[in-house]
Image (cartoon, rainbow, N blue to C red; front, side, top):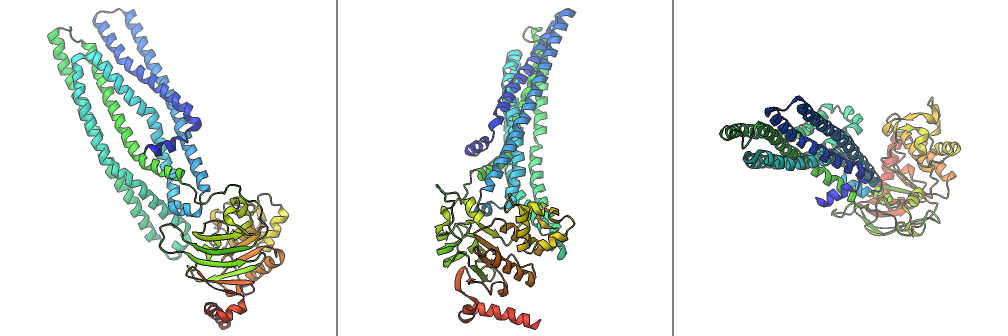
Length: 582
């Protein structure tokens, strides 16, 4: 836990100054508040002794000054605590966001996207609230408690024995309450992940949900997850609600004890041992002690809630990216040749089965390579090793004659352009989306890439052309249009290797053929890898790879595979026969 807290505190940075100022102002506020009962006691006793109006006014003005000073210190403490806690939250969000940008796919898989969203929102808010409470109440409560006990003992004498009863009782009760509530608070945050995951799936798959009329089922699923969180919070809050009765019990016990015993002492000693002013001060100090203990318990509850959040945030901040830049990274690539040498790969160390096994293949620069295989055959896993989206578990992947691990990551990925199976468009104009490939691209380069991807025709059909706004996720364009925009974006990188991972599955056969023809004619020196489900998309490739069960089972040209590969021949005959029947 201490290690986690230190990790979080590294994000305080420029907020250290307002934090320290807040602590100073809190101490000033407490000192003024503790002085007020003392001055009140003095005033009561002076009035009883027949003090004149001038003395009463001067003492009253002193009380007003102390109250105003306490108010000023409190305002300044509140201002600086707000700056410090909000600043810490901002830095934590920045640090986590930057950290996540460096994560590899393996790191993202480890946490899951829904969990990362929860950590950057709910968890950081909890830490922000806990930090504000720590620098204000966590300082105020112990200092107030200590000062009130000292002043109560000085003012009350034997009456201070009431503290020996109420402090242990209240502390014991509050600790038990905190311990009972802690497990419920801890379990809530893991359930938040599941709730966010349900929301994310539903929003992303809304068209599927409506297409299958599963709105009621999804609503029930969300209701169950939400109700699960409600039950845990209700249980925890019900336990925490016992704070009030225990507080009231101790408060009224203190009041009754001080009034009964104090009155008896005044009567018996005729005001020698204690007087009315001291009793008034004792009641006030007793209340301050109880409130301090209550605040300490609030801190305990809030920290209990935030402990899990601190742990979850620290996990992200301490996570080391599984893929990093090497020392003396290479920033030159001679060509787009690719070689897989005895490559095996699995997505996690704990996985029992490899996604790829013993892959050996060499692809010469400028070749067009097709990759065919059933679902789960390892096609996508294979191409993700080339730009180091993942690293091979065993063996070596080379690009341009060098191991990919020797290249600078940004340089490598700028030269290996991938249109992934689940590519994304972002909210903004078409032009802004295309410039993700090259932020300095000219209009001529953008138009050329769009034309090559067969996207220029539908773009120009929009009233705003390249300034047409794309909704988040590209929901206002069709699947085929989205794929063509992603291809154009990849082409703007002017890469040495272009990988299309089933990226023309949503376009018609004619457009698919035009795209392949354009790639072959206009970027002949670029190595092109095309993963496809249609044989027609790869028939004219220089090399076709057949994947099955994570293994490369066959390779060759279309004619060679028709003779040597049963899998390829079966796929070809099924698709050709289907085409003839139509």
